[in-house]
Length: 501
Picture 1 (cartoon, rainbow, N blue to C red):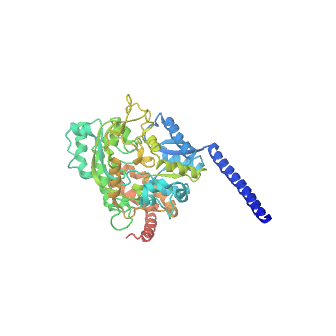
Picture 2 (cartoon, helix red, strand yellow; picture 1 turned 90 degrees about the horizontal axis):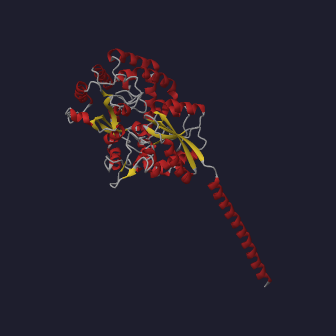
Picture 3 (cartoon, one colour; picture 1 turned 30 degrees about the vertical axis):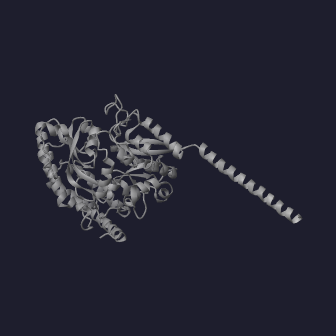
């Protein structure tokens, strides 16, 4: 009996101990949850470029985004919009000086440079922990496109990940002068259209450039391999041979055509020095249109932005390469004090429809309303001229396919864009990003030469018969052959590792 009592006493004692432990654990767990609820939210600095003026209601939109972010990840954001023309320099200054910066838009053309300078944080571990929606919505091919030496320093936004090329212009002038666009199939065919516009509308330039780029811009069938300092021709479909783009027959032919068009008065007069966006210039009635990469629904998109109906003609097939996929990415600054929260907010941009709509369209009821047909549009009394938020950069913020569709667009525009991405010709080098660390001195020298000649040649201000040979000679002296050799070496290794022939 005593033994039984002793056993029961032991059980009771053990129960008390376990209950005590459970109570302590429960208390600790509850305390931890309370601390999480009461801890001060982290503020993240989020930088991105904007075309034109910063919308007057940007702070109101920022506040609405913060309501969602605080509830979901206990963080707020300080949006830092910067003009397109100043963006690259401003990012370099902020990252070099250690100024507070967490998330930033990365232009693909400067991606290698950021990595070489050690300015970006590797995202792989953060993605595994906090970026499930980023990874799943992009899929492995497009997610892995920005990898450099097996590591990710940026994630592409979900948008048109391929590009076709063409000319977009005001539809009213096409109608007014009975311009037949059905026979315009390639770049040379555009000349008759420009001639008609020049003769009938002498006070308006037939074409303008895109902000800080040339008239010609990225129009061609090259795979730029990131920076145009060594490219693959024919959309990367043939031999994986890296060549000097500026020393090809295609480039020579193009700059001669640009010279001809410039001399004929088809371009904006100050095209070489112009830094205004094409949208602002066309909206102001200074130009009719511009060469551009396009996508499904592009004409409708531009119509909304410039406030007049636009029409587009396709001049080159759709193609996807590392540059088209990586052209707009998000990354985390190496100096971020809160990279985990930064990744959590980045993941919201790929998962949360309300966040995407706020970035894309602003505040429901104030900047847009939902229509009965499933589209959205301006509220009564609001238009593109008086709205407080006309950022029109939905492609820049996470998964644009989550955004509501503006009236006037095809209701299936996101499905069509997805099909466009999947059906486009893909460069054999899609996913290759070269590391220019070993040739960064040459890259700097060659880039300086490019900045001296490229705009002048591609805008037709320079005589290519005189200036192109000088350009090529200076590129060679600055070390472009060494860059091309290094890029070829890395491409060969990548191709072997990925079984690409």
